[in-house]
Image (cartoon, rainbow, N blue to C red; front, side, top):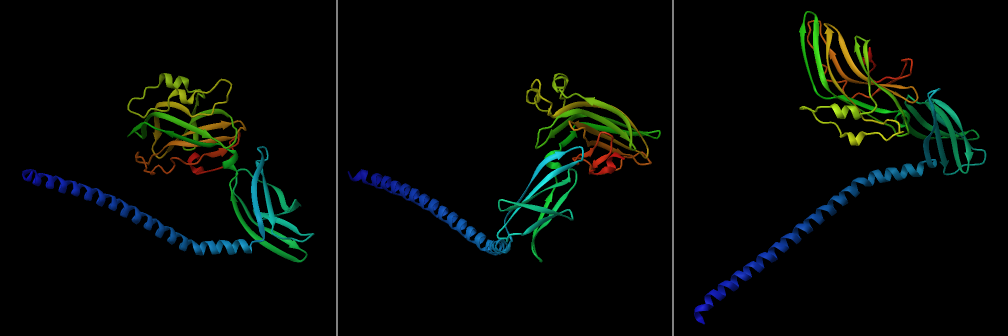
Length: 332
């Protein structure tokens, strides 16, 4: 028995060591958890302390406010007059019989009508412009009380198309005899969306040289043929055709694709622009630049750092008059 005692003791010692290591590991886990909880609590307390000033300020502003509630929303848009109804509503915390209210929008004062404890008004504002509802005024006899609103609104983002177009692929160029020969190839991807129902009537590729139109190419609204014939090569493959196929009887919504491979001749000292033009169901036209080459008098491309890339679309009427211009110099 004595000859087995040492191995038994050694085994027992190893078992105790294993048990101790397990316990130590568990303790380490608990300590880590406690440390994490303490850090989270400290962070929470710090955030609460830091927020005290802001909360007090918000509370004081709320108490000092004349209004229990204020809100705005858009009504119907009139594309002929290029305006949209802005519906404003304010509810004073307290007011006397005979109190009059008015709201100041873009520097003009509009009387409000009292109904059900709230003063409301419908204001026609420009569909393509920026709108500032500055304040509301409450008149009680000779006393006028004012509450700042500072609502800055852009109706076009709610009613008009949001258009984005880009051109992937490659480009090469070389100057010779007063002409910069420019080769461009790749795939155009034109995406369209809107917060409201819309219609796309036409998508067109337009070539421009020094502000003068050189040519127009109609881009199909149905991408089926594009996907049947497109060879991706080394470029990135667009979305599968199944993802963009349009159901029968439904207006096309995009994205729209077009494969470009063409040579252009740009005279020295000229600017060549390639842009996509989209016409919607209200006969509004949206233009997005997808390529641009500004050639110097010596025949070298002037590095513009692609500042035009991804620019917001400029908007025109059917006669070409500017309704909203983002970087209008791109089309001149």
